[in-house]
View (cartoon, chains in turn red, cyan):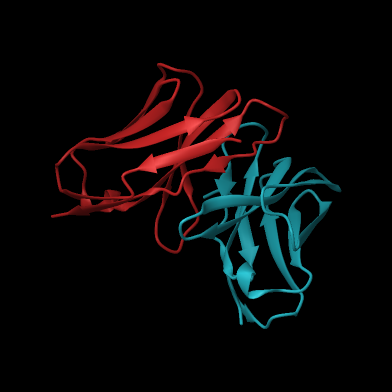
Length: 112
Length: 111
């Protein structure tokens, strides 16, 4: 059974204070690891897909990295608008549909 | 935003009544998915579709059925709603074994 564990559950940062979110996973053959951002009352918004260990992707203040057991979402000099819940998911390398297993998310709050 | 709409956006119903949620896409993506999101559980897959009339079960399919008669529409039906089905329901689409794009969600309350 595929499993995804995210830590910490909640994180409070001051504006400009960099940090990292962790996503540990076990999957029977990784097709892809996905990061999403979710704002209250809205659907998840796609951020990144990582396919193999050593891969990195960047978008503005966010950088996602991948190892064989975990992924990190690094947030550099965050701003209040980065406050959201960040979700991690894995897709197994079986079949053609993307049957994702999600973690429970990290709730990030960035204050002035 | 990906062209995905869900209706209704909010619904309150009573135990034992049938409920149908609709997902409509304008992206012509082959794959469509229904998830539920509950505190402490994250997003869990209910059913998915890999083409018109082609559907399969996900992790939490008991008490739910789906239908897809057109590429653009994917319906989720609760035949007899129970309080345990109170949740936020999200529809998603994808081209294949790739990233999924989510709709805005439907908040369902079963009294």
